[in-house]
Image (tube, rainbow, N blue to C red; front, side, top):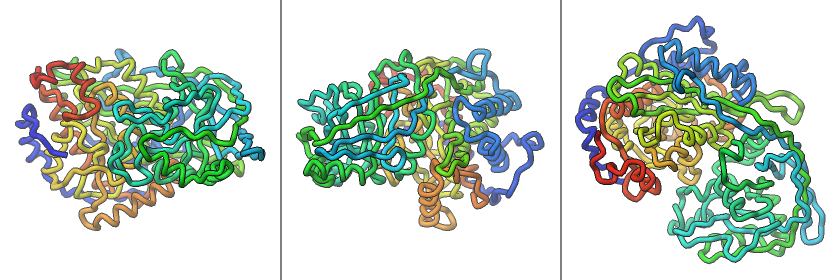
Length: 569
């Protein structure tokens, strides 16, 4: 994607060429232990030591995995509030540091699926073969001999001339579908985003569309390549309490039952219908695909405990000195998976050190630096909740913004930072999306670094973090992190660390602070992202999405002057 010159920020961008020259910070190795929070003296600058202190506290056993609605949330909100107060950051929601997010907490009891496979009864075991939940808000959901029908990728995209539900009445039926987009599994670059996942490939979209179609239930077939993560991530993520916004906050129709099955179960399902998973997958990747009724039906009685509850976004405000009603937002999600009971009955804490204690620590460090020289526009530091449950905290904020979205200049999202060390590159999720990349490019050039898309675009990271709710509403959003090409050890070294995290730590109890982390890169990254926000907060320009972006129309409707190229007031 081209990088256009962003005229309104050119003067400040030139200044950044000096401010962002590559530094030579000392190697910041992670100590085996850190002092108690009260004993730590925080510096005014962004430092590895301060960043690490926040991470260690937030991912400690005491915070119990930071699950919404638990003691982990209470401690997290208290810690963030105390840090804002220490820094002199004002409450971000009127007189309060919190924005209450109403939620419905549903915990389904593990239940086997009773499936009739062409006359042969079988059961799918919860956890190992399938997972299931409900968005209905009802304590009991029953399906009795619901016919199963394969709907390809479960995509209805009129603008692409693609409808996997064409001619199908799904009333009373349970739809079965593939994860990712048409074209992905067969390497067809002419369909949808090719290797790059679009929103149609996300599991959240697939369940939403099945509900809009009126299905009784929906099941996604897991495969590691298509989903971007192994079955264990699905199993852990669908175990324990699941959270949702109340129906009043989300008028979209909801499925009575939704879940996943693993690839082995899917193969047996299609074999019983005289088909093969490989054949139907190939069929689903061709234009004109038609739904395939299966010789199978599903019966399940799902019992859940359902209760109304609430969680909190935590908001801190650095008020602008000249245009306080215009705001730049730095955000990250504070929540993780909490504490769960393992198969052997032991309690496992999902510490969430990288995901996302690193992001929260980052916005605290950036926020503290802004307090030392308040900007002309306001800066909102937003630690949002319920990301792991479907980006719900940010979804609620977008529906109930503290600042009108038309007055929100941009969002910079920090989620699961790279701890590889100083890198030659920047990885921009959804690369080629908005003019925010032009500002980042200036800082990257000054640091001797290059921008590029994520290597694994098929995993759809752009749609998997909280900035996406702002993007859908039109607000330009940047989600970038340090790359893997280590300045001293090369890209293979960085890839090895990233692969280890994805395989052994992501959404697992092992996501803890590691003494091998090299935080020099984190400091470099945060300095650059601080400068990106500084350009916007001290300027008067309104960056937009690039021409051709699916989000540009929403922004142009919010700020018509932006569409005319005159929006600089």
